[in-house]
Amino acid sequence: MTQRYDVIIVGGGPAGGTAAFFLGQAGKRVLLLEKESLPRYKTCGGAVSLRLLEQFPFSFEPVIQSRVHAISYAFKEKMVTIPLKDSELCMVMRDEFDAHLLKHARAEIRTGTAVHRVEEANRTVTVETADGQRFEADTLIAADGANSIVARSLNLRRGKTLAGAIEIEATVPEKILTRFAARPMLIFGELRLGYLWVFPKLDHVSVGIGGLNPKPGELQSVLERVMNRLEISIHGQPRTGHPLPIYSRREPISTARTLLVGDAAGLVDPFTGEGIRFAIKSGRLAAGAILAGHPEGYAASVNQRIGRNHRLGTLLTEIFYSMPGLSFKLSLRNPSVSELLAKMIDDRIVTAN
Image (cartoon, rainbow, N blue to C red):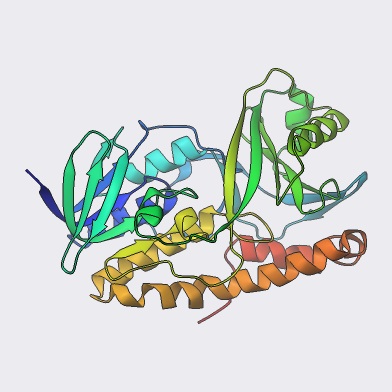
């Protein structure tokens, strides 16, 4: 027997969780399908703005690992640290963050349930799971990541641009924790198109590397070389890989009854690699379009509220990586520019009304 809902959400990350929360709060009957058992580890730097989280009527304090008071930028062996005024950036672990958000959603949540196929008709969307269950809804929200099964089923985002990323949750000595406490580091100049990061967490540091079109083995070797230089031992520590769907152009992210959000819609910032902020924003926009009775307006809203930001990010990426040394000297070492970037990440700048 096929069970019916108002909205089905595929994926339990920040985008899916946000949509589930606001739809459930408005009284919609929501089913969320998550292929993993929660909480589950997710490769992610974990930077998020507390200002962005103020839209939720509950506190995220229980899942905040650390707060950010400065950002360090490095270009090869040169480094500058810029204090951040009035920053409300914080660091989270995605397993805790995602589970905390879903705990507050008024939705039926089924974990360990992978979606196998999606079919869209004139008046309904049908989801078939890997174990043969079938569910129907008026509308579907796809929050199932860069390799979205929903997008593939509906022939969306066939020409997507993916970068590669590797991350390690590194156990380090106390002196390393102290060095990076409240001060994440972004490292440029080691890859032609990409960067490395060191993000402080409660009892460890998240280190990683992301790049577009890297050579075979390049991400691994560069990560090891740079972390050795920083005295961060990653030998023998588990590492995970993850595709990053980089925004490169405006493209279809919806059909009549299906809306792609977050990584499934390719909304990772092309300059910073940031994803959580735009996952939450797109999840809220998708919920809003459905509640307004106009899901067809979702894509235009994303283009206005997110796409303009990303087109600026694409331009910044092209400029920065065409002359990284000069860009580092003239921009990232400039406190005003660094503060501007921090304000963007901290969600204090609105790129469109």
